[in-house]
Length: 58
Image 1 (cartoon, one colour):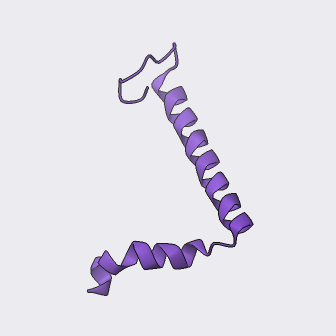
Image 2 (cartoon, rainbow, N blue to C red):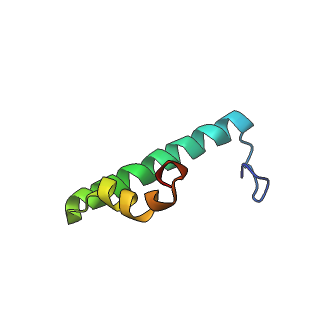
């Protein structure tokens, strides 16, 4: 909706931004809960998967 790819259903840009922020918070919370439930160390996994390409690690 924010990018114009779907109908806004009468929502203002501010309402669309608020809805996006709320959905992102929901997604993050679910990921954190799943990681805890399955014993996944997210910090270690992010470090392993994403950080080798970080410019400060060259």
